[in-house]
Amino acid sequence: MSKTILTEVDGWTPLIDSIVQAHGVLTAAVFGRVWRYCQMSDGVCTASQDRIADDLGMHRNTVGKHLDILVENGYLEKQDRDGRPAIYR
Image (cartoon, rainbow, N blue to C red):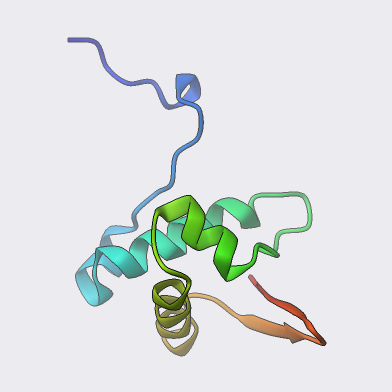
């Protein structure tokens, strides 16, 4: 069986082991997805919770709960914006 070469895969979302151990796989998946959006040129995630939820096959409320955990534990910083989705870095 051949190895999977990440450069040949159409996108991937990392799961950070220490986040999985401390907070579970769902929190780690949300972090990984936000991290992917943070790889864009501005270094922040401007994706809505709906978009992140769609990407991961989760409900928006689930994403929000895990974003809160990530912010509370210092993995992400949240910046609220007037009438628009918050951004994360």
